[in-house]
Image (cartoon, rainbow, N blue to C red):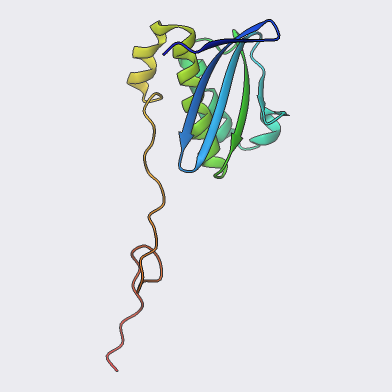
Length: 137
């Protein structure tokens, strides 16, 4: 599953990450460690440090934070979904770059897609499981 591609003379590694309804298309270029999401700097998109940490974790775990520039295009979902999807995509792209990272990332749980999604609303109920209040009369 090595996905190395070349555009305009630049080699990059590709990975797709998903969480809830968010889908992240991640490209890793050899570089200094800048992260760009939808054309904006990473810190501008994720102002909360929690999300910044989630996104950086696969790079920190493999000690490649300053070896790759990350370019992400993402849509769907919200902040938490975005952060999880980007981390998943970065992990997949790192495995495409070097297979030696696979056991480390697998053990940390970054290569496993989080399958939890919102449950559909059922008829006769107010939400997926919440029933209307019962009254005797």
